[in-house]
Amino acid sequence: MSYTNEDLAAIEIKDRKWSTWNYAALWISMSLCIPTYMLSSSLIEGGMNWWEAILTVFLGNSIVLIPMILNGHAGARYGIPFPVFARSSFGVRGANIPAILRAIVACGWFGIQTWIGGFAIFQIVNVWFPSFGSLPQYFPDSWGLATGPAITFFLFWLLNMFVVYLGVDSIKKLLVFKAIFLPVAALALLFWAIWAADGLGPILSQPSRFKTNGEFWTFFFPALTGMVGFWATLSLNIPDFTRYAKSQRDQILGQAIGLPASMTLFAFIGVVVTSATAIVFGQTVWDPVVLAGKFPSRILVTLAMIAVAISTLATNIAANIVSPANDFSNLSPSKIDFRRGGYITGVIGILIFPWKLIADPTGYIFNWLIGYSSLLGPIGGIMIVDYFFVRRQIIVVDELYRRESRYWYSGGFNRKAVAALLIGIAPNVPGFLTTAKFIPLESVPGFISGLYHYAWFVGFAISGLVYYALSMKSNKNNK
Image (cartoon, rainbow, N blue to C red; front, side, top):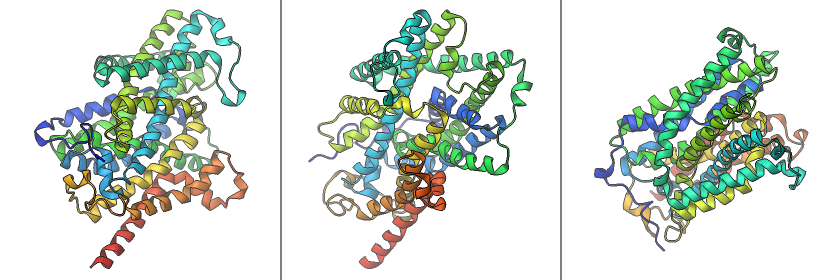
């Protein structure tokens, strides 16, 4: 069986041409998206005031920058993508475990972005044909899916799949459009908020809705974990991008310049606009697509929603198709190429019910962002410990692509990594089950369920320490 193809092969040094500003531009482009706006606005809806929300976003992105740079080191040094890098710690075949876990999360994000784009189209149709919003209900009530939004969601999904069929190069012009339009649209929304609320003063004077410090901290720590979880996916598969770096300095500086600053600035716009909606409409509107639908001009709503749909399409292909396509390709390099990996992503993106994931800010943070961070934190801990402390940054690249190498371990799996992964995930399972209401809250001790509020940190630390202990023990036994 072949363990490589054109997409998984190491990039030669002569072909690594990304500079500091390429990585800064990448993060500026990735940060300027609707979910980033919703990320910060969900904190306002959850009860924070403007500076509490901004500080939480900044802290979360500063924290996740650390594993982002550390995992990016191997990509820049050896020119290998994330699924291949994972082979050094999990085994040539075992790397499919972190790759698929990361891919499934990407499928969820694909579904969320597709739902946002589809709902933008729904707003266009509904503003011109109001009866479209009151079509008969054909889906079970438990699905929480109205007929009109379902139709436009599926149409936008088909458009995404058509772009996958054409190939990733077809998205370049849309990315240019996004890079120009979305900052302009965001600034326009900011100016509207300031005008509609009679200046920044009333907006920034909106108080926190937490009555005690205890209420604030109870919300803050899960929210911070959610902020880290937002980019926990990219903190793993960042080698997919850093493999093209001219040097370590380029990937480190580029990410340090681009990630925290752009996320915080765009989050500020989300915070200001969401705070303004409480003044203008008497309630917080945390979804910008819903907000745009409230504007009185049908032409303005139409133009805004067309722009949202196009920029969302560009982001979706670039951020949520390329990486999972590589991950699925790692399952069977000779049979799954980019196009087939994209189709798999699309199907799972529907099955994950994305409209439920972002139905409310509480579910968005506590169920979705924290939930998947409990899976990805342990993977990050294992990979960083293996690369920096067990292997001392030394990888024999050729052996990552063949059987019976040092990375084959036992049948292609590193059992120490798999064990450490399971041990790191386990403490967060009870908290997830109670938060998602699969089991009653009182059935789990408060301390155990409370660990879920720190899911990424708990999983990262436990799995990293367990893996290091198992590896050191194994090394001593082999001496």
